[in-house]
Image (cartoon, rainbow over all chains, first blue to last red; front, top):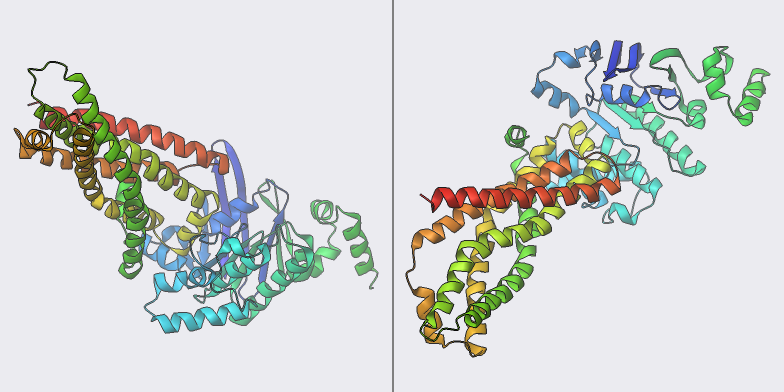
Length: 254
Length: 234
């Protein structure tokens, strides 16, 4: 569980997060949504420790990040898996080397054990024959799967995903969404996803945090988001005719 | 930045492979261009010296002497380093800068890896072998001078070799290698700084490489002046 209490973050005179509080629950896919400039990325980077909030605390299962010493912070970071928007695979390494990287860095496992684990997670993300390929030789969807494999290879307690569906076709986007949800439940991970994708909201949003102008404007789950009359949420989520109709159909019980 | 490079070391088994990779990328891959430039510039120095010795009273062995002095004192340590600021420096800045732009450095940090140590420390260690490159440059520069001088008909082999051995001061070699070590550290750190702290996209990677080349070259020339004054001027 990740508990965020009254987090504020500014850059110069511009206050991006204005006292956000929420709880991201373990074993659930927690989504952060909001318009561009609403503070989603700053929120995610604050959770990752890349940005330090000026006010408020972020605690990981009771460990308050700002109170940890540098070694404890590095230790905590080894419990975190991250899927970046652009995948952020190391382009000089093969797929297998990318996935093996956290194990080579933070465990004393021998080569055979690392190879077994890499095979296992690559199979888990449905990548069988890509071990020796470079990131530049595989598709965007495959790169995302490799990024997910790398993020989960070290059995993280916390998984963060920044726009995991961006640049993917609808089919691949759904596959990636489902994969993240399955992995979250299977390994009982606290997963936080930063997304613009309303399909993801409807499909895997077990906990949804809606940010507007740096404030928590609404929170709930994918069922509640259909019924909410919060104007900001309705204006954002149901801005397209398709989702308006989906909502109407859902409310009519179809 | 410098403090963080030596903080929280990466696991040795990983670091060892990184160091070998950097030796391959930075040192071994530079040998060809260094050999080519040194050989021909040494030849040109020899020919230019010969062509300027118009007075018949000036002995021909001065061609060997001038070639040796030019190559050992300045050409090999300083001007090869300026050229390497372009070759190695651009490579370092663009490779680290691309990692910054594509969030690979963020990925390292999020995993708990000290990215400065992981990326820069192996380059510093690899560049401790840089004097080896400059040693080859010195040898090939003088050899090129000998070849051009003798086979171009400007001097005899005996005269050239006598000149190359004349009034040899061993400290000049020490001076050249002290400069080389300092330049190696500049070559490892300035381009890394410009790559690591760059902001923006692909266009800015190119700009960062150019700025890094300019600052590395300027630093090499300034340090060359200061070190020459300190080591030979007093």
